Length: 357
Image 1 (cartoon, rainbow, N blue to C red):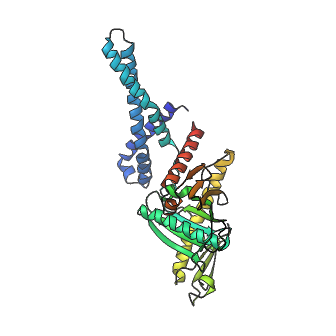
Image 2 (image 1 turned 135 degrees about the horizontal axis):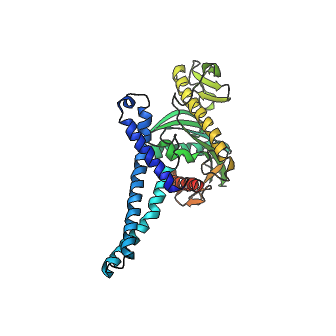
Image 3 (image 1 turned 90 degrees about the horizontal axis):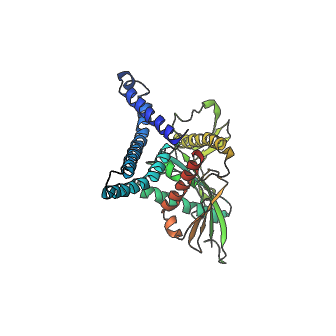
């Protein structure tokens, strides 16, 4: 289907939706919210299409003026100048419309669950995991997003073996979805006296936070075990069996939660994480099917993929997926991630555009 045919189809659908929403029986029906959302999403596309048609119409009129031998030289010159301006506008407007027509990721508007786990590198990996967790916390705070710690499994000297948080706000998942993967650090560890540079790693997973309607979980598919919470070094932090381990039997996904003193609260937090992991599991299956014929995919969400290196001696951060290096490590670790995220988003949009063109 050509771009013009596609645009006509979008405009027709927008008109149909407008007519439907004006009907009294539809306004009172359960479909009203769904149709309103689709109408709202198509409205900016139709506005851009109208601009495009108007510009094309003006170009035709100006071409006719330039070609008309009865017009004097001054009028022809003015028409030619205006024609140049409008023709220059055309490619960017067409590109904007193509971007608007790209299929939306339904999860983009969702909140997110952030999970960070220490990888290779022992204590130094756990310290780096804590650094990353604080980096995302600062990034969230700058955007006035709510950053709620769900679970932290600390080491004795301030590292995090595992840390989980919920991030709530506008378009959280859209901004953070390319952060999933292995993050590598090169630096002299605080625990190293000889001053040698070590390489350690931590795994980041960013999942859209699922709601009850997104994932149906049957009680029969769950095994729930309770045990006594323990803190760093194994000391008891609770004298009751309040910690909860939830196993989703069909997938084998396991979530442990022990931050709260109440078993009920630990179970509720654990179910939030489990629901999001199951939702992400289903998304990953669909993404893998769609990506079967692709050679590369920015931000595939593969947690075993090394995506970024933080080199402290050289003060640089390199994202390996797009070959971008920034020499401002301290600012990145302080939560200034927009330049990296914008570049990853642009690369993803460019790739998706090339697939539909």
